[in-house]
Amino acid sequence: MEDLKQAIISYSSKDLEQRKNWYSPAAEAYNKARPRYPEDLIHQVVEIAQLSTNSKILEVGCGPATATIAFAQLGCSMVCLEPNPDFFRLAQQNCQPYPNVEIENTSFEEWALQTSKFDAVLAASSFHWISQEVGYPKAASTLQQGGYLILLWNKELQPCYQVYQRLSQIYQLYAPSLDRYEDIETQEEILRGLGNMAIDSGQFKDLISGRFASEVTYNVDEYLMLLNTYSPYLKLAPHTKEALFAGLRHSIEDDFGGSLHLSYISAFHVAKKV
Image (tube, rainbow, N blue to C red; front, top):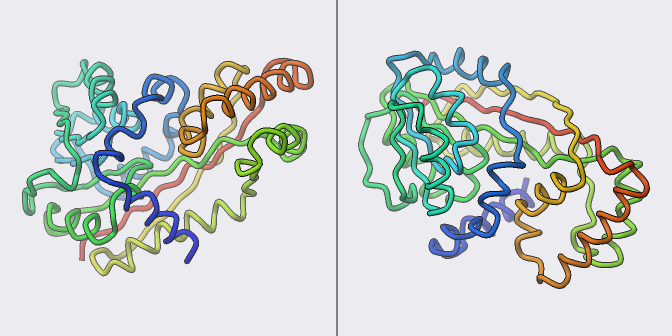
């Protein structure tokens, strides 16, 4: 739990301008390669948070609208905040068919608080970018009495352990700091920690959590595009990334027929305003 808190502090303590532009180099890749959230997960969340056509949702850090559309399809009114200009543009394009969705190019921190206005605050793989001192109290303040905080997470897509061991040799050559494998137990522990933080904030209660395992196949281009969207890869020096990706491409094409079978956990935490 301490490691998780430190990791979140390292994200949320970055300068706001740096956070706003962090994903710009990979915005298009993020839109294409990051997986959406499973339908069953969305159904469960809608049920638990009692969302309907009449609900008002505030989404914090909507990205290119990765989760937005699934909720927009309910017909409810949504205000989506996205500080990154490239994500903002993509979200506008992706949400064109949904007049009930309003997207604002601003951060949650800078957004002018509207007190007791929303039925739900939604954050899909984004809440760790906001400091806990701001995030939970501001989310609670903007919720109506009995409103819900909805946190969605997609953990990193991973090949099976045997495939990882083969790719690990390439990481050791070019980027040893990125050579890591998270087993299911570790991912579940991280997800538990993320849920507990909402309760520990003192702003929320009655936490309900759920998780879904998904499997997908990515060809080598899709996989490298996906890696490009993860923060540790965004930080890599260009020549290091080039060498690493050339090595990975070579191995995936030669050893695994040009594609990888990947799995990931999607999870939700829904908690009620105290």
